[in-house]
Length: 77
Image (tube, rainbow, N blue to C red; front, side, top):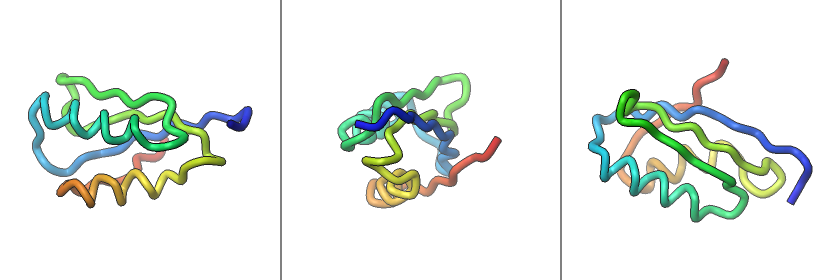
């Protein structure tokens, strides 16, 4: 694991319920290099992911969403 941690915000296009968001979060948490992933019912289209960029690429999160039937974009600050 590197000494650097990055975080990104994903915008999920589709409407999702609480259980779907929790399931997507758990899928991301199972990825090597993901340190935490969090979503809130108050902002159902957003998910914040903290990760080690030496172990996982942020585009992998988009592909993972696509593989699970969702469309998402990275949100820049």
